Length: 423
Image (cartoon, rainbow, N blue to C red; front, side, top):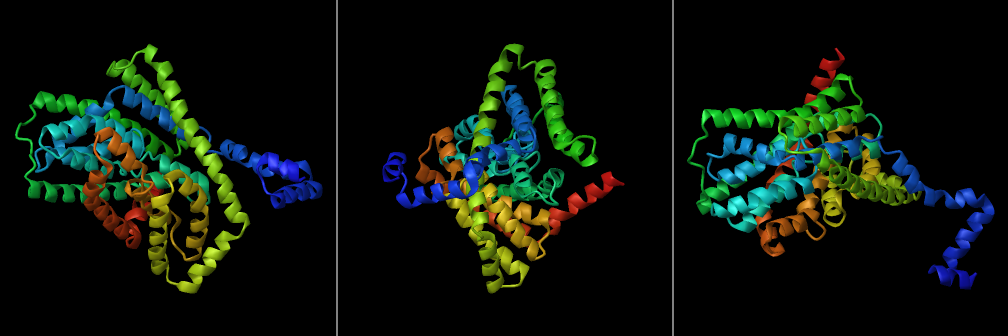
């Protein structure tokens, strides 16, 4: 036994545990944990996240990012710090295409960071605005973050409810970031656009942008109305995106499709592998009674749900600094959702607070993937980027506290729309 354990790089104690489990329960029980990631991947919500990725990839490769940034510039570009406002508003509109922070940073950053630098903005500041506003993408529907959360937690929370619940928080984050951008732009004397768009330009930009923005409306309204499942809505959106880019804008050709399908499959496979392997740790924590220990800890500290939410925010902020978004949702989502239910926290409200909190970790060191992606796209030093992004992260924390203690901001709109479509 010692030789076998040495060959496989495990201790004798672990080797004897494996051997005793095999003798007691047989090979099926022994292999259960190795099969768990595969079973988990097969339990992902059909093809919804893969189809959303495909629809976003089609729109990205079809050059729709330019249309949305032009639309945002038309609306807010004449304000002080106009290019910064355009960046933030562009993230709001771009959220309806990809639902991904990294895609937002890459697509919008490659266009807007050089444009802002040419207008006199500090390059690190332009990058900070880009990565700070990128968290809007996973909040406003269709959001891959909410799809993963609904899959991980299950229960009474549907993907459609979470999609609608993210609209108001996403807009609040955008307004808070625009307020900070306006203040900093006044302090530093950043520009505002003096030129006006002509009426033909306004018409052309509006039509192209609205054609793009129909796609998220198809997904959200289709799911809420009950006409589509989430998977069917994502499939319809993908076909719509393909039709727009092939027939309406003519920015794609049939020869582009193989590479688009390959790239979207590559992104989806990475997500599936990440989620499936994260499920192992979630399973271990659950079987070892960690949810019970955490519930006992919170109950010993307080029986007030608002104090619980404050403690939860602190813990999640710490988790977000050291663990990436999707693994954190898979590992800790089911645990904390169960505890929150015991405190009487609305499941939709909890889901939004939980996900928004973890999203802030994308731009906080040491792990913050948004920082590293932004530094690469913007070609700036990480230290300068961290310094410039701090005011925007502070504003996002303020919005998080507002969302935490004003549940109506996350629960009223889903309730109204669900009752409307149900009636």
